[in-house]
Length: 222
Image 1 (cartoon, rainbow, N blue to C red):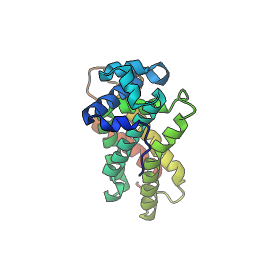
Image 2: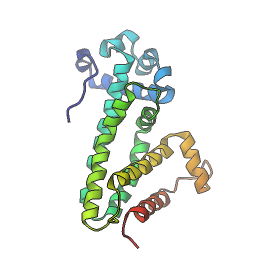
Image 3: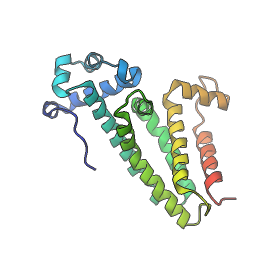
Image 4: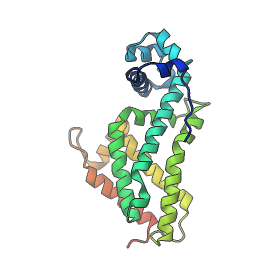
C-alpha cells in the first residue's frame, strides 16, 4: 500500500540511524505528553538534535506526528500479516493467536500503543479521525474475512451480525492492548484478577478467558 510522505527531502538524505532516533524520540514524547503538550524542542532534545535540524526534516509538529502515526500503521499491517488467520485451522485458534500477538506487540512497542490510545481521543481533531480510520482499515478487513470464512465453515451462529462481531472482537483487542500499556488499564486488570502490583500477569489465563468469551458469544461451540 502506498505510504503518505510527511517529511522533507532532506530527511531521506540523513543516515538511517538518525531517522530512527527522530522517530522514536517523537513517539516517546508524544506518548508521554500528548500532542498539545509535546513540543518540537522536547523532541529535538530527546533525539539529540537542534530545533533547526528537526525543522529541516519536518515542516511542523503536525507533520512529524502524522509521520509516526504512519509508522504505527505500518506496524499494524505487519501484525495482520503475521497473524494471517486464514492459516489457522479454526476460529478459536485464530482468536488465540490474535490475543497472544496483542500481548506480544503491546509489550514490544509500548509507546506506539500509547500513541494509538492518544489517537482515540478527541484532542487531535481535525486530523485524528483521518489517521485513526487509516490505522483501523487492515484489521477491519482481516476480521471481516475471518468471520466470513468461519461462517461458511459453520463455526459461527447463523444469525450473527458479522459487522458487529468484528467490532466486538476489535474492542476486546483494544482493551487488552491498553491493559499492557496504560497504567490505569493495567491496574484495572490487576484489580479484577486479584493480583498485586508485583505479581506476574497470567497470560495463559487472560488469553484463555478472552477466547472463551468471544467463542461463547459468536460460535456454535457447545
